[in-house]
Image (tube, rainbow, N blue to C red; front, side, top):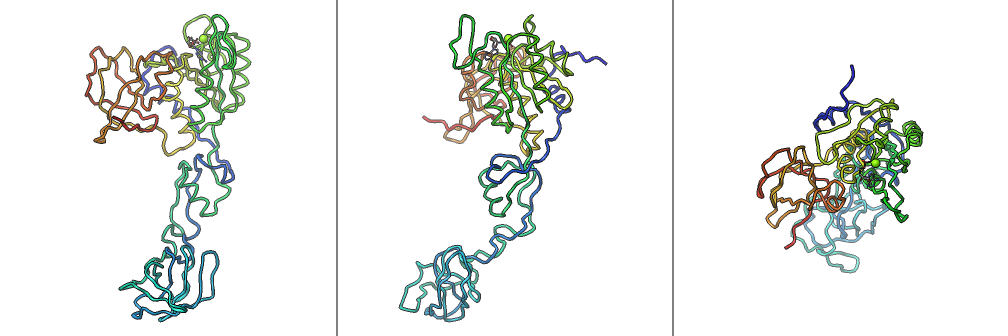
Length: 409
Ligand code: AMP
Ligand code: MG
């Protein structure tokens, strides 16, 4: 049955359609040092205890707890990194450093601040020394056999430290999606060039590369092409063959030189072409074999909003990431907002005020060509279509696409 590709579909339907064609990326093994900010492939269970030996948590003296006499004979020294041949008994103590294994017989560590040295003895100036005091027992930080990290976890600073501590090197992570980016338009020149009459510099290739990197993709190719059917066709054929995902910008509107649109019908299976949203109504989604093709409109804000709303979650899902979507929250509008005839993703800045409340203001004129409306924005505000303005003070939903900002007075 022929699909009505020109039917304007709701963003939720667009997302559901895209998600039907997603597939899971395979695992790859990378050395630990290269694993930062990658997605963990499988669940991880601790193969050893941490700490592996009872360790002192203070510099001081290892003693027998509840030994009534404050005087102890010093029998030796135990610092971190080896095991000294020491046996602590009632009436004796071993000098010890933080992280060192507690000598056998010792059941507590008295901090150096609570002691006084007297030749070959130490005097304990502490009322009661309880068993286990200042000792980290075996496995207390991480018990052997316990779940450490779940698949889909993003390997940030703490996760990397955990992996290193457990000796996991190399690490099985999810292979990054291989993505090609193609900017189309006769008017486009390189950022390093001076545009001639009627020309502009290619912005989308660079904004999309950055957005892709943040999303965890591997940008294997990025280029620019004119509105020329033969050149675009050969470029698209190459990129489809080499990539998991192809992203194009420009050439999907109604003009005679909007050549990406007809080429997609020729080279791939088009699933939809128009979404009931603003900016970014012409958003083409097609597949060719396993390759996903997203064709974004050329206006720089439309391209990035389309990426954020549809392509980023698709890539995160292919990666099996625990977090696919950005967090959403309710925020208070700082000023009136006028809805349009479509769902409009207005760009906003969500700030935390001194009382800890969240408030949002939009970033000035919301034209789809005005990239400045995205600069500094940490939120998209999906404004439903309507005639009535939404008043300042109303609660609206915000999609948090960046870190919260603290309001300054
Ligand atoms: P199009 O979708 O090709 O009709 O382009 C829509 C608008 O976006 C036009 O004003 C183009 O000049 C502009 N545009 C297209 N591609 C880019 C690009 N890569 N960088 C900046 N502006 C672009
Ligand atoms: Mg164009």
